Image (cartoon, rainbow, N blue to C red):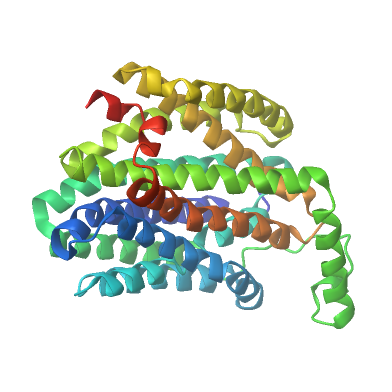
Length: 388
């Protein structure tokens, strides 16, 4: 059983935050793919920068927000994260140039909701039950991503930019109220800790002990390998998402509301992966399956320039989503296995740092390559373009 008596209310709150945050972020991305070339005469590289600057905001606040949540509690830190997204959305209504757009995206990115949510899961659920809430959290983010692509495009088409932003602001306001009402001030229930209380102190010996633990983890080959995998998967996935959104809208004249359908195959792969990763005990077996699937995905990628057809895109998108979700899901859960007792936050923060680093580099790197170096680079990775 979960360790907190209000675990249902807490779970509802962090699931709603995850859904609306990913929904809002993807909706804004679809809108910016239209607004940037239409209103500011900018190219795909600038659009990639909006994703990069968003991820950079997350990268910069992971560890400061982690320390802050340890000091003031998970609930105030989560409310602060939602507030930063809310301020960024409000600011986006009044932008007059591309620099203001980048600044608003940076503000929206300066939240650490995912890392704080994982800390809440660690507080509320015992180790043997953490796999299920992590799976639900991942599924919720993916659902928000897909519906943000579909419904977000429809909202901006039907209502226009200003009213669509007001709706997004309303969603985030509802999220703020739900967290304020449902999440208690203290999510962690004291137990018979086997770790000395000095570990939580700010004394030099306690800090030095934490540094020794982190250094020893970096000497572990498995730990370094999973960090590298996590970085690479997020670099490719988020870079390709930005590329798809921009190219389908601006180069192939698809309506924003139609773009979401092209994210459906990866979502199907994600759902298949979640069915295998619902419990924590099979994570290492899942990682082996993922390794073989990734090898198949790589060899399939080599033949994409010679194959055409929507069914090829569907197959590849499903395989890609399957590999991506299994890696992220397994990494998120396995990260807690590497951590000594009471130091889960530090280890998970390192994982999320590498996740954000991949998100920072991916969109700009891919779109810069397509825009200035090798235009056919995108064709090799996205077979749908061969059929349009």
